[in-house]
Image (spheres, rainbow, N blue to C red):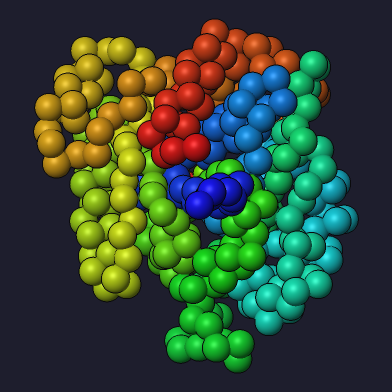
Length: 294
Ligand SMILES: Nc1ncnc2c1ncn2[C@@H]1O[C@H](COP(=O)(O)OP(=O)(O)OP(=O)(O)O)[C@@H](O)[C@H]1O
Ligand SMILES: [Mg+2]
């Protein structure tokens, strides 16, 4: 008997980028991973990024203020509206309206993005915690289940879904964890970031027990590395301690150009935007694919 193999249906890997410490480079890394994974001249992956942080830094880095204001915020198509009115978004016909699909990122030249999409945020997400129902929405979902429910019908449309988390643990961040297969933890090799990492790992353990989930930390990603003796000592402590998730071989150096990259400006090439970190970012995307899977 002859077996005909069916084409494999690719379903997205959902990855949260998180650390309880602020300013460790989470948003910068989500932006760079998205741009390098999705670029037509790079890896050509189908990528959706979700800005789950009320600071909305990822949204400002990837989409023009005018488009955000007119096309999304004024129309109630940002994450806080989604958390307030899940019924509206879960209706089939409307479900993709809150996804920005055009002109995401300012990296251009020979490159374009056939499939780089963004679910934008707004500072109103700050208020949302207090308004969330303690139990269920009328659509029979709990707030913590919302992101997973929103993503379920979209999983076949993407290779990777990256979620930029706020530096804390609340229902919104837990909703990202529940929707995710794995997480990546950016960490600056200094004492306080490592404390943030310790605490996050404890919270992930507790989260997995409470929600019977299996969120795995695929790696610690060293970011804003300036190779000082103090940082190198902290890095070594991460490398030798088996308690920590494996450290990515690629390290992101502290660079002024990378910091400028969070400001959405004129169209730039990868090299103009990332300067001498261009090769590292390419390697990071490759290592990401290797660690997370295709
Ligand atoms: N590799 C880097 N080199 C230099 N500056 C960087 C680098 N990565 C991030 N920065 C800068 O550090 C600041 C914090 O970065 P970013 O916003 O990515 O961190 P975050 O972890 O998302 O912060 P938050 O917890 O506030 O969301 C920003 O001003 C950013 O431009
Ligand atoms: Mg951030």
